[in-house]
Image (cartoon, rainbow, N blue to C red; front, side, top):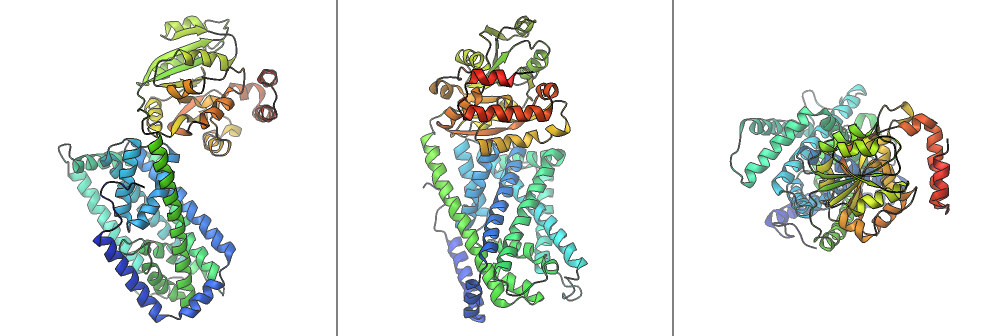
Length: 554
């Protein structure tokens, strides 16, 4: 396993951190009844502990999505799946390199090497990710503090006392304000690493601040992650608690303990977490042995997920080495099957002309009786003819494409200008052989809401990308698997199956808009039922020709 440049197992800083951890643990365990702690651990409720394991996974999932938003802000995103994998690996680095500073540098260096981005831009995204995480922590602290206030949970604090976590948050906010002022006032010159990082940080911060469609999801994912992290300790405490606890009153202590255990001077928060738990939970009469037991269970979870991150690092390094010779694609050929699409064609072609990476548009007509062929030629497309059948039409067009990437696009679908760069960025991941876009319907109805997120569910559970998601494929891979299957229907099922044998599928960071005319013609529920029925018949072995008759039945 090769670590990023500048990172190694031994350093004097980590040796100091290990010393601080051992000193804190020795001090704490010398003052408590160790037998009582072992007794509390023996009584652990495994359902609660299992729930805490899932909560930790949810926290990492939310963190990966938050990290992806930060990468998008600096123009360094690949795909949500890649960001999620790197965030899990980053958790391993966070533990192995004692905190956010070493972990972020290691993760960013790895991300830059694997996906061939500039390191300064990726490091800037890591700082934006931390800023979003701080915003999420603040929101959680405010919510739980308000809950504690309304239930008299803060009454035991002496007048004028501020919880230590509150002091840390005020200090972090002050530091954040200073950094924001520096970011605004200092305009670095030159092309050195520091100047590039600060410029990327400025660009990303401005983009987040001016684009609510990025900032709001980023804060929501940060909130999700921080709530889940607080729930981890809460579930661990519930797993060892022998008596009912005033959960609403002490809710504010969980994010506080989480913040304090992330300070970069101990190994995985050990020692600091126990000390924070004893100090804060002790205010509510939580037994010492249960405080320490809950902290130790949380440490076990942190190390377990770090172990999973190490396994993921090993696997991704193997895949990166295997696929490292794949070149970065730069041009896109669009292949468009069509029959009687003269009404939709002008808008679709206009959207494609706004994408700089598209170098050719091939329309394959399947026997139109309107002006589709003539209109396509007037709009600058290369026009081919083939027998009716979407698979065969796309197969012919893809075989004659010359771009590095072949994009299969329905004639009633428009793509945004950034779609080309998003597709090429997605393929920076050398393990990805093909991908698609997020999708929404034009003039959608209530029953079609949520179509964008169905794309993610379809990929995660069904392991495929639908034909109306504008599937894009590395041309050399498409040639390797024998081209687009010559099938009148279900060609994307067979195509995705073959593609999965050569690499990954992913979703690019752009949203396309497609027509809902089939749903409007047959009705939403009827169309969904028919799609489901045709899919099941295909899995049972029904021929595509027979399925096409069922699918196109009025």
